[in-house]
Amino acid sequence: MCEIIGRKNEIAELKRYYNSGRAEFVAIYGRRRVGKTFLINEVLHDNMVFHHTGLSPYDRQRKVSLKDQLQNFYFSLIRHGMEGVAQPKSWMEAFFMLERFLETSDNGSRQVVFIDELPWMDTTRSGFLTALEAFWNGWGNTRHNLMLIVCGSATSWMLDNLINNKGGLYGRLTGEIKLYPFTLKECEDFYHSRNIQMSRYNIVQAYMILGGIPFYMNFFNPSLSLAQNIDALFFSRNAKLGDEFNRLFNSIFGQAEECMDIIRILGKRHAGYTRQELAEKAKMNANGGFTKLLKALIGSDFIIKYVPFGASKREEHYKLKDSFCWFWLHFKEDKNIKQEDYWQHHLKESEITAWRGIAFEEVCLQT
Image (cartoon, rainbow, N blue to C red; front, side, top):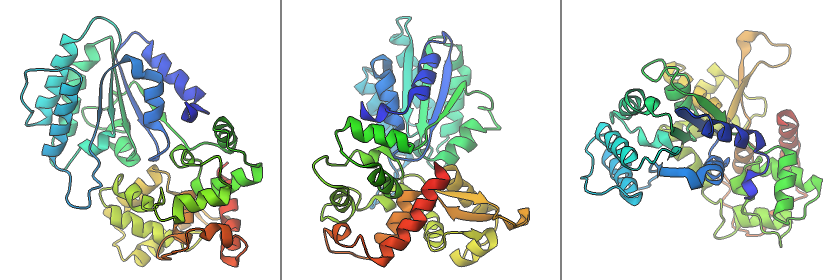
């Protein structure tokens, strides 16, 4: 129950939608690893009649295809009790199967349907959005006991295709919840609930590295010091977060390499760059495609757009805001550190001191 800490408002919202007595279509979004799935499972698990998670696109060998996603959805239907049907060949057919399953299992009580990592299911030319639209507009919104919850870490996809949809799903959402990283106080409550003894000074330092992301904080070992925990997470032989940067971006963005390149450039200058400067350094055309990448990174809370003090509105800058990325770029990217207790033995070095000053300033700006 640890990750529920600090989510009172979100819990209340979910319960309000659950008890509304009408059809609900709720979108929950936020940075990957922020605890969206955990929250929904903890609040509504006992009332779910169907739960499905899209297949991650992060596959080193091949791209996850429409066929893979449909097969996975089919297995979820079987797992929840559907029998006597063949594997669907399209999303239209798959959602029709879901309709039939919900109709046959309807006993009049609230039916909670949870589809996790929805953006992953929308593969190229799959017709997924059209099928989802048909499912909700043609059937779901008439079922007063249906509560459809969709979740996604690809925030720009959620915003463009659901929340700000201009097509068939325009205005169809009945609720939306954005989940944010923990505040410093929520981090303190979290560590206390896990019997992790840390001073407020160390809590801030942990925040400067992990950014209040519950998934990362959950790896902390109460028997280790802060420095020992950081070594275990990042520098040990089997570090829990040893490949997190690549996994993080490949699981969210279709153009993951381009997004990581932008993040790497922004990580070299605290004040950030103008759009044109950033495009030139990234060797990208400052066109609509580049704008879309920046919008996606902003929507997923990795970067922000701002106007420096004293500058005109035409001098908008983009800068990196994600604490985890700041730390990764400074101490993991290209460093190839072999020392497994690196953090414990280098805390007083100038490089870490310089990083600490910038990271603390970011914490002050964000909290």
